[in-house]
Length: 71
Image (cartoon, rainbow, N blue to C red):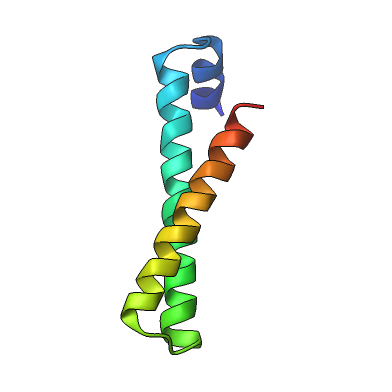
């Protein structure tokens, strides 16, 4: 993949940082969406409870993705 190689050769700069933040946000959004759908439809939880769990696990997923991107 030429795009990945081009971004890696740019070195530690704004392009690499923006790419990491995009993946962190994507990871958080995917985790939040998954837990919301699981809570709301599979477990028949209330909307309030589902949103609260989605927010909580989305923040946890973002923290985990951030810590992994800095290794």
